[in-house]
Length: 401
Image 1 (cartoon, rainbow, N blue to C red):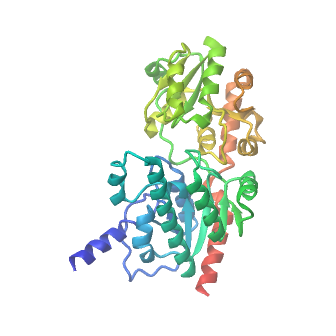
Image 2 (image 1 turned 90 degrees about the vertical axis):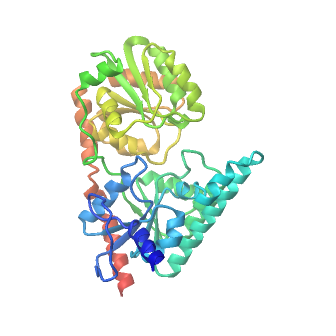
Image 3 (image 1 turned 180 degrees about the horizontal axis):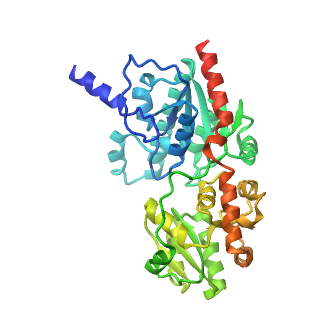
């Protein structure tokens, strides 16, 4: 009896509902005929996307439930009600070995990478097998595509998993028209697709400190133009191009590189520290610090080498900050109607980035900010999920019948 009670508590701990995302137990007698979406994984991990997305669904009367990982899906998935399973970032789900295997992998000195991939492959197969079982039980499998290829390293296991998930997903949710084209070229046409644009960050942004106070704390010139690369510092974000560009620009402008580096970016951080016009904060930033760095900046640097979609763009727009971004399909699509919200440059091209920064500086500051906010206002969450809510309700009715 004791273990049964504990199991019930564990299951209830996976069920989250409401704008506050507080834990809520759902008794078996709790009859609620509203459409329900099971979101995998739940909110957390420093990314507000799932929280914003779920809040928008709840505003439309859609219930949300969460499962946090592969083990939880397999152990407790059948106890969670919902007609639609909505998968996000599957590469992160199977990229983590099972808990009982984690300690084991660190004792392996030889063939560590092969062992890591084997564990990852097992997790991927377990997750895909579970999704197939749920599909046979009558649930629809919807995949929200954030990346056609994982930004943090896309290996053969991710490729296999994406292809298998594509074959079983009944609907692909994409943030842009360009994303569906990119996906179709690589994996083939999905069974069905719905455009669900990435919404803005209104409602979760922290109130920034005074701009002058932030600049004094960071050692940034009070009146100079400042550009920032904020968030986890990764090689695909074009850090080497940024460093070379600001070396050319000299003291005309300042740069802030703020975030925890990894991989090849760590070596480039050492180069950045040597520049007189660049300030480096090479550690994880909490939400308040992130917001403060953006507030202290005049523009956000997004000269990424590759993306499918990226929340950093709408975050900057929500903060009324323009961007200098690479000329990729997603950035073109979002910024196309507001040229004063940002400047597009060629990726991996130092001269193009320098010219883009100079062009951006020539724009009137107030116009840049207003244009950025107009972009953000176009992507209100309640509006962007409208078509999706229609599909959720249609799916719920078809299952009920």
